[in-house]
Length: 234
Ligand SMILES: *Cc1c(COP(=O)(O)O)cnc(C)c1O
Image (tube, rainbow, N blue to C red; front, side, top):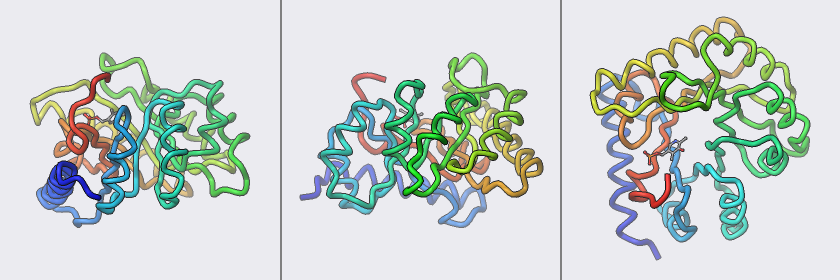
């Protein structure tokens, strides 16, 4: 059974994304919605799946593994890991996820490459960039980016798809765009540096700043609150 309480916000989130793409003069299928389901029950993920959502983002390893086990029958879900990743948990993440958005060091990338089962397609990787310094301690600086990108691109079981950032929150739309501009420009220079890499992804924009991110080229917006409602813990 589909809960109408989820149908409404998911439909509204899709409409927001389409409107943002249109306002940016981009094709309506130019960006995808990643449903960030951390802290939310599997019943909600199942409902979103019934409404056609396939890509889900989780931030906590054990919570994600428990949910994947409960939802094993939904075998076309594409799981994205978007939280900070400790090296001692890299193996299970390399085995159970299709994407990781939070790669921020070469040692972690090498472990993920070695641990990715060769029976699976390469693991899709976004490098997390700390784009507005004060925001969080996660992510590499722009000056560290070229070296890490070169290293990840060289690893056979990883596919370097793009960049992710979580800018400092702002309610000013002009202010919101600044870090997204920097991330877009960083991806553009990486494309020049690594013309062979499949760099098609800008993972940026959340419930509060999705429009600004889409204006600057986001291809994957990560929406939690807008779809599933407010969370108890961050
Ligand atoms: C929680 C989280 C989101 C979703 O944030 P909302 O503001 O609830 O849309 C997006 N990205 C990351 C990395 C997150 O941890």
